Amino acid sequence: MSNVDSLPPIRDVIAKYGLLAKKSLGQNFLTDLNLACKIAHLAGDLTTFDILEVGAGPGGLTRGLLASGARRVLAIEKDRRCLPALEDIKAAYPDRFRVLYADALDVEFAHYLKPPVKIIANLPYNIGTALLINWLTSKDWPPIWTTMTIMFQREVAERITASHGSRVYGRLSILAQWRSDVTIAKTLPPDAFTPRPKIASAVVHFRALPTPRFPADPATLQEVVGAAFSQRRKMIRTALKKNYSNLETALEASGISPTDRAERISLEQYCTLARELSDTRRYRPQSNARSMTNRTP
Image 1 (cartoon, rainbow, N blue to C red):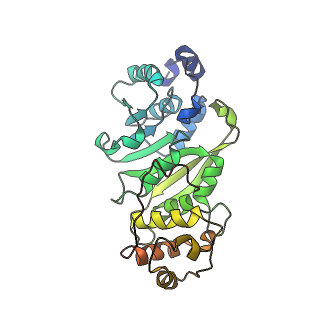
Image 2: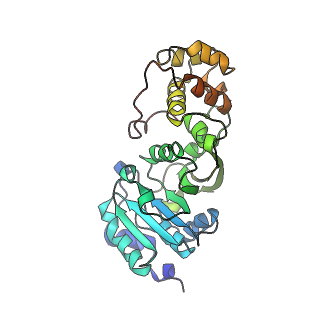
Image 3: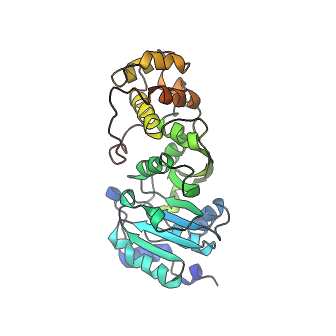
């Protein structure tokens, strides 16, 4: 019998500690331990990897990761109510599990993990996009993580994997596909979570590329696509004209028509445009992961 089998069912843990999910924290707890193990297996062999998990909650996915042989798991959890449940898991895996009570947006997780590292998480809905952007736009590349296997709402997963020209192609599509191979690995039913979400979820698998597909400054690329897709129904010339003094020249050099709309512009073109604009901005908007969470991807 494995250690995970010696622990009580997750629904019993939730009841024992009164862990009603909080909408304000974007919580939907994974309760199916068999499914948690299947998700862990989607990330490949874990036995030689440290794992970062954000939003562990009562520990459903955590237990799946440990039962699947993860070398070590670091769980970051902001909800103090969940800590006793996670301490129960730590008692079962004293040498392989650590919990940080913290806001994941404020944690330099590389200080706590030994490479190679994989990120596997059921991200809280309210910070999922901000965390993903942080991980995809880090200044240093390749990053500490080799792969990420992350649960999102299905509609967010479709945005991340969308091709240019698609109606759901956007900021997340570009930032994800610029530096990683990305696929939807599995769709998850609402019944796998508590409370039951209104829509299906999906597991998205990212594999970090050794170098970005096309050269570009991460901050400039993020600014350009953020501005473009915040006004996606407008022509690119209109969406960006207030930001950049040399826009017309840069668009021409990038092979972009001034009348194109954001979703018609390819990843390569956005990277070229970012290079053209990077040294000659009229201003550089403040990049703040928290403030970007509610922007349209």
